Image (tube, rainbow, N blue to C red):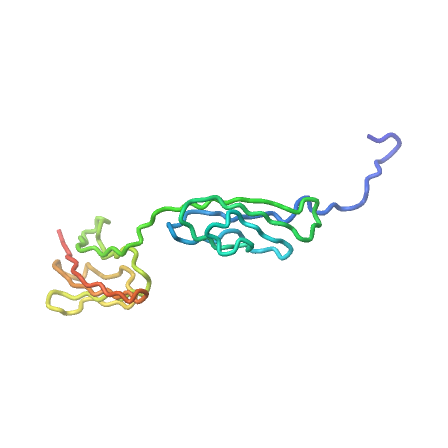
Amino acid sequence: RTYWGLPNNPDYELGPLVAQPANAGSGGTVCLGGSVKLGVAAHTSCTYSWYPVIGLDDETLAQPTATLTQSMWYYLTVTDTTKSAGCNETRDSVWVQVVECDTALFIPNIITPNNDNKNDHFVIRNLPPHSALSIFNRWGHQVFSSSSYTHDWPVEEVDAGVYFYVLRIPASQATHRGTVTVVRE
């Protein structure tokens, strides 16, 4: 209220009401034994503290990597070292869900390219990148070859029958051999 004129308001600006906000990231889902990066990019005038430290590569980083064997909450405390704000600590948390993932290589032994969107292509599940595939007919003639197979064998160009494959995985230096039967209805 004023009685005889305009109010006498101070002429200055207040600093920020809170320190640098903590951001623990978005979390998400990771395979058992897999890794996920937490947090966001660091702010130069802040220190970071994560809890629990289970599975973290460094609990003092703004963006540590967590290697998980169980689902868990991670809690982040960010401390503004400039102390320019009245409150110099902020906190955030993130939930990371761990699930069982099928990581085993699965090579089908039969495909049915009849355009029903079921088993129409030679899809090798969990195939590592840059895996080489060669496919041969029953007389030993090569009908397909790829130095980096991406499930692109043109099955519509081959006759029904049994084909032999050789799959080389450079990451593990493994070689898989077997047969795949192409069935046409």
